[in-house]
Image (cartoon, rainbow, N blue to C red; front, side, top):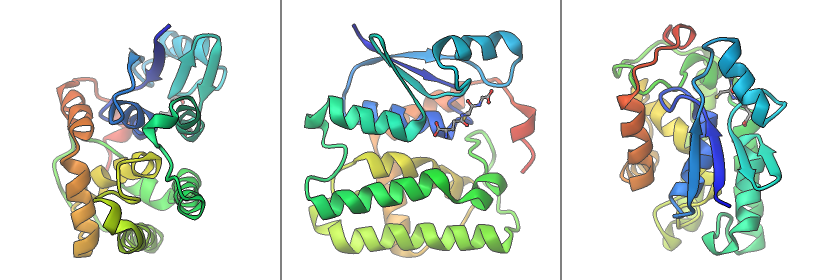
Length: 218
Ligand SMILES: N[C@@H](CCC(=O)N[C@@H](CS)C(=O)NCC(=O)O)C(=O)O
């Protein structure tokens, strides 16, 4: 039975984007179940019918349901070891998991001040000190990875993997909020933006017409 990935609006749902990219960039087949977010009780119930968390993304693999973006990426890594979602080397894998968990649990200021909204015209806004600190930390993470693993390829640990999937929406945030970054970080963003799976998500997002007012403020 094909995997099913339940996702929200591609324009806004950065959590949906992460496992979607992990699957698509590795050519793992799945059916996409799109449920528009914040439209009211009926769509919320459709999400609840898949997962009691009431949130997307969720991955359905037969009678197994996995919810939460990072748990899905971990599951995909186990289920499809040939995809090499995490680096083979134990120390590098620990590093990749650390930055992925840091992304998953942190960066609240950046997330709230620079929401992912692919339709939004590129425009800078004044960021709080906390958001600026988040930007600096993301740059540091990317640059450190590029210094350590650049010899293996252009992504954080060489080939595209779980950590890249976790940071992909940040590339859109930096781009659309015109956040200037160091050349090494910009090179990583360019690599990500050239990834076919990233481009597929982006063009599907730009084709969406649904507007979620609460995300159109920045
Ligand atoms: N920590 C969760 C966050 C999931 C989440 O917040 N999803 C949002 C969309 S990006 C959602 O489903 N919102 C719909 C709702 O709360 O009704 C993850 O990593 O998957």
